[in-house]
Length: 449
Image (cartoon, rainbow, N blue to C red; front, side, top):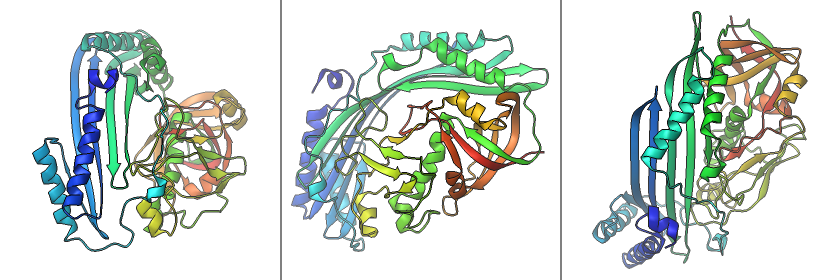
C-alpha cells in the first residue's frame, strides 16, 4: 500500500487484491466455469457555503463489491457493501445460485483472455488533496465573495462548493487478471443570481481537475459565475427563424455525447439507434476527426484497462468524417459479431480535433446567429436522431453579441446537425471524458415568439 492509500483509503490495494483472489477461488470451488469481481472504496469531502454561512458539510465514505459468475453460458451476479469474509462468501453463493436458474446466452462470458491488460501504464490519476473542512469553507467563502462582489446586480447566491474525492478500484477475473488503480477528483463551483429591473437570471461556473493545483483559483471561478449571470440580464425572446448556432465547448461535449450513445454496442444490437450500421459511413464533414486517447496523464477519462480488464488503446473513432467503428464491451461485441474495443464502462477521453479559431473567432465566422449557453429538457431521441431542446444564450449580429436570449427551442435532427458542422474551435474543455472546443453549426431551426 502506498502513502496515498494508507492515508485515505482502507482497506488498501493489497488487501482488496487478496479479497478478489479469494472470491475467484470461492467461485471456482462452487463450480463456476468463469468468474469476475470488482471492488471499490471511495472517500470524499464536500462543503457548501451560501451567503457567507456554512450550509452543508458532507463526508462520504463508501465501498462496494460486485461478483459475476458463469456456469457455461449461464450468468449470475450479486453485490454487497459488506466486505467481511462471511458476507463476501454469501455474495458469491448468491451469484452462483442465480446462475443456475438463468437462461443460457451464447454471448455470455468474460472478455477474451488475450485482451487482458499486461503491464498497464501508470497514468498519474491520483493526487489526494489534504483539505480539512475548515480550509474548504474558507475557499468556498472566497469563491462566493468574489462572485457577490463582482457587480452590484448580483443579488443572491445559490452558494459555492468545494469538493475532494479519492477512490480505489480493483478488478480481477478467472483469466488470472487482477488490476487496480487509485483516482482523485477535486472541484470548486459557484452559482449566483442577478437582477435588474424585472429581469432575474442565474448562472454558474466550476473548475475540476485530478490535481488540486490545476484548479482555477476560487476568485476566478466566482467572478466567471458572476460575469455569466450579469451577461444574461435583460434576456428576451426572439422570433422563430433559421440561423447558424454555436455550442460553446462545455455544451459541445454533450453534443458529441449523443453520438457515443448512438454508436454504443447496446444501442446497435438492440437496433435502437439513428446510426444503425453506420460504420464506414460519412457522418461528418471531412475535416472532423474524433480520437480516443485513454492514456493521457491526469485526464478524467483515462483508464489503463476497462471494466472487464481489457487493455485500453488509442484509436480513431471518426477519421475524415467517416465513422470507423463502435464503442463495444465484450458482450455487445459478440452480439454484433465483432471484437471488444475496450470500452466496458464507456469512452476513454474522446478528443474532437480542434480547428484554428478560438471562441471569438467562431463568433466572428458565424457573423449572425445564436450562441447557446444553456440547454434545458431531455428532448433528444437517439433512436430517431430528433433533437428539440429549450435554450438560452445570445443573439449575434456582425460578429458581435447584441442581446441575451431566453425561452427559445432549437430543433433539428442529429444526423443533419453532425453533417452541418462548419468549424470546431481550439478552446478545448478538459473537464470531462469528451474533450471538445466550441462548435459552429450551419442553420438550425430556432423556435421563439
